[in-house]
Length: 73
Image (cartoon, rainbow, N blue to C red; front, side, top):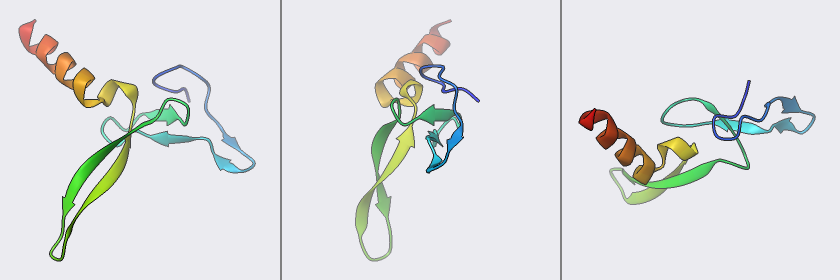
């Protein structure tokens, strides 16, 4: 299994897992290349910010740019 961003080989080490999955595209990302996006969560009692892990390709600016390029093709 390889990291989506840098291509590094990912494996489990003695301490546990050294990677996470992107919440949006579900591909594996190493801890060096993972980014976090804050999203508003609404509940009955209060609103709060939840943080989700994403890969570099799914960051908001890059995702919007990629979607626009796909529509223009």
